[in-house]
Amino acid sequence: MEHQTNEIQSLMEQGHMLLGYKNWSDADKSFGQVLELSADYAPAYIGKLCVQLKVQHEENLADYGKPLEDIEYFQNALKFAEGMYREKVLYYNRSIHEAIGEANEAIIEANETERLTRNRAIKERNSRFDAWMSADKGLQMSKLPSRAEQFELRKDRNGNPVSYFSSRKKIISLCRWQLDCKCGNLYDDGAEFCPACGLSTAEEDNE
Image (cartoon, rainbow, N blue to C red; front, side, top):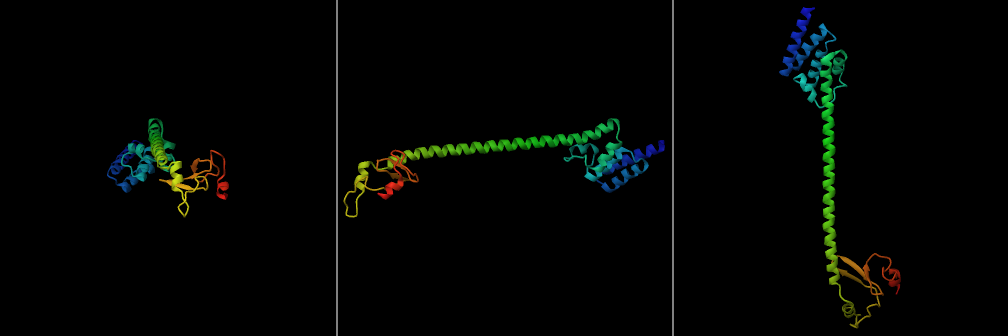
């Protein structure tokens, strides 16, 4: 019995040394020989797990990045592990899950920060656009001719002045079209009714 224990210990040390050299094939053979001597030796299953995942040191399993519970070697190790070694094996998998949880939280936080930054940029852009439109509207109104000027400007083909209210006319100023109503109000093209008197654009067109 003592001889078997010493042989298992020697093979385990050899297997871990081979893991350190990335000699996966020979390391796997060493751990396999241990299991031939003792099929319920949990550390040998963890050794085979390290070979499968290409992990050089058992402690590095905690940094593997993917859960271990669905891997057969890990399941066998838990099946036979006892006491402190069982807690150690569970710690490897628990550390992985904690790291994954922290990474997911970081991703969620980064996405939220990006969303807030994007929304803030959109609001700032809209605010600048509204300010520009407000200033531009004032400039447009300053460019519109007065009632008297419009009367003088509007003439028929023979050069005779045309009454300001005799017809509907589109006035273009910078980037907007506006309509003049019979009541004298100016309003945006596309409206169905004059907001001042309620006269429909269709009624004006029919006159």
